[in-house]
Length: 362
Image (cartoon, rainbow, N blue to C red; front, side, top):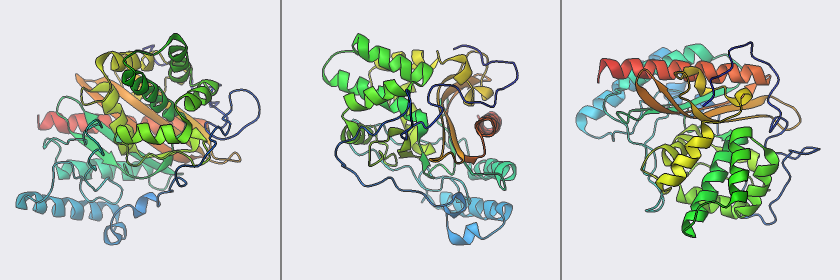
């Protein structure tokens, strides 16, 4: 993985995938509508982040709601009624257990170690509230420490346009198809994978989306991976598909852990590409990483018609002897640079605070 550039950050997005990332646009590199038959309903649009939990909690001030949520969860834990994967009922935290995978080959649910208790979850959520409430758009985060299994989610079930992070899905789908045929990727498929993951090339993504079976193929592979909240766009605009931070973490588990339908060779191949991203695209969760430890896939796109930006970063980083999987999704940024700064701020805050909490209670 090349080290992140240390010079001043440009406010202009990288060239590939910068002007649409999943919606029709003129010229080469744009996404064209390649779906020929609608097979699923339109992607759902989630509620505002502050409406993700109960009305009672969302009506309270953030700190009071956090304390109330933590107290409720703590009481239920004492009664033995809360599964380990349940986050505290914080106004913007992920407050429900991760649903089980739909079939035996899918990635298992995210398991949360007891090392991260409800008070720590509420504390980190309150820090994120203080940092981002009142700002433009929404922020969602899902992070897991691979040493303990402890996971943290903040608005992790909120839906976002997926933008170019979906190119990781497409390469995973190609690898799943190849495994079914008892082979590895062909030279041509490997060239597509490299262009998508290292350079975020839209033409390569168009080709891969067709090769993978358009919307129906995308839906089938997504179901096999257990991504219950990731839905393809009804008209085949791959970058306009919807996803959640929790589903991005599930996909990362399929890439970085043995709990995966992918074999070891496929996982190692994906990691090698995610560790060789073009320098101008190596921002995001890498801001929270030790030198040379980030393996990632980012996404960025303005809303149709040139509106506010979706800017996302997903992947794995190492920090202070711990390896983390991390997904940060944002929308509503007035420009690309603001979105990148928000993603990096959120990733750095959560990974630092999660590590601190786990060090206190190893």
